[in-house]
Figure 1 (cartoon, rainbow, N blue to C red):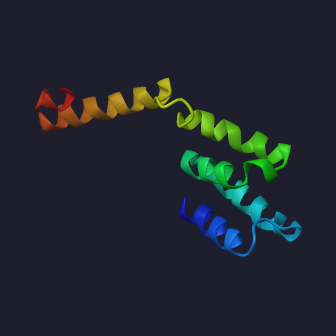
Figure 2: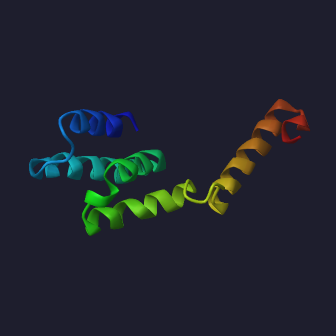
Length: 100
């Protein structure tokens, strides 16, 4: 996320995206998709959503959707992972109050 903001902030301070900014944007999109980081996608779409190519948008939107940030709830697979982690923590602690 900080890499994304580090790309966005100086670019905006210098007057926003210019034609020669495509390499920066491409690198940010690749890094965000590789990391599967929904918050970074949200930041990038907020800052430059209307200036991204359809290919870039096509790469970023699935990351945002899988993060659950666009729906304000955890997707079922992430909820299951969280629930499993809580159960394991509770079991290891020997105290089931972790779930309440």
